[in-house]
Image 1 (tube, helix red, strand yellow):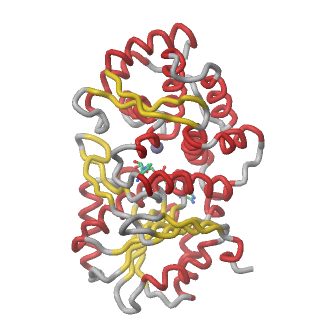
Image 2 (cartoon, rainbow, N blue to C red):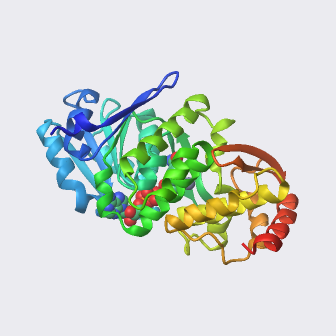
Image 3 (cartoon, rainbow, N blue to C red):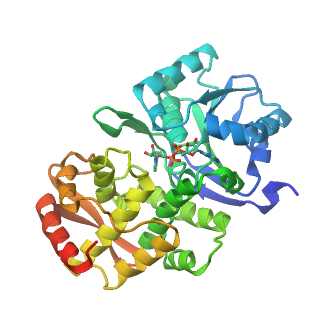
Length: 363
Ligand SMILES: NC(=O)c1ccc[n+]([C@@H]2O[C@H](COP(=O)([O-])OP(=O)(O)OC[C@H]3O[C@@H](n4cnc5c(N)ncnc54)[C@H](O)[C@@H]3O)[C@@H](O)[C@H]2O)c1
Ligand SMILES: [Zn+2]
């Protein structure tokens, strides 16, 4: 059967740059047909990917591009966060120049969030913008980073410091690519899924702890629809979009405290969500019992919820966070499962609240 017949389609409705998200198993087999309308027919097309993704899924994508008669050039990078760097950007510019990619060409980001962020930023700045599409292959990228148009690279001074809002023209999500994803990476993606449930959807949240074999296509669809809904109302992240940062303020601090080495992003966010929920409870802003519920669901998804490091070392780390504006810290708290809000706070207040959290929960 044609995979398109059992796919879900969402549209991100933006004032200028709306686009479709197509979700379905074996979508890679029809990716070429989906990309074809975006291609002029003779300009260069580049598929940027990493060595793991290319090893497992390069043949499927190549076959579907060949069938659609799209002449493309793969650029296969080593795996890892190191690609999201000035060096990675420069290498990609050089490849684009070599293949004579013009503004009417097309770039496809085929990989996880690293490839998507790097490729999106390179596309945004190559000749002031060449069209790009996202074909995400990690759970994190399928539920989060491929949608919403945040692109960027890391600098020695911090993560994601150079970037642009640059929306893709299309997002093609094939959940069957996740069969080759290492279990740890799946768990990291699940942390973001739990986040969507916690901030916006009690039914999604409840479904995560009630089934042992979650239907990933359904979950991805639900997460993308929550994300696009939020992005439609706040594309440039001045207000409502901030709630997508639930668990991220302290999560980023944990990543920084542990040298971006001990924990993957999703693992740190799981700790961060448990801490943020507990902070909300000691403040009286979050319904009591929510932290236990959150911890149970995270544990059900295979995630640790008690950060074993020094939680009192975390608040000072917030001072240099990109999201902390002029000393004030914006922290996302839950009212209850499915409802979140942004709380303006200070580093000193967080320190005090963490002391209470420690007393009450031994988190
Ligand atoms: N732009 C955004 O809105 C946004 C949101 C969240 C995170 N991010 C960024 O995303 C990045 C993390 O993304 P990630 O977690 O996807 O990491 P990643 O891109 O490094 O992928 C993780 C690992 O999985 C491998 N891989 C990818 N797909 C695979 C597959 N189908 N089978 C087997 N292996 C596969 C990769 O080679 C890599 O080793 C970070 O840089 C983060 O800053 C961006
Ligand atoms: Zn995240």
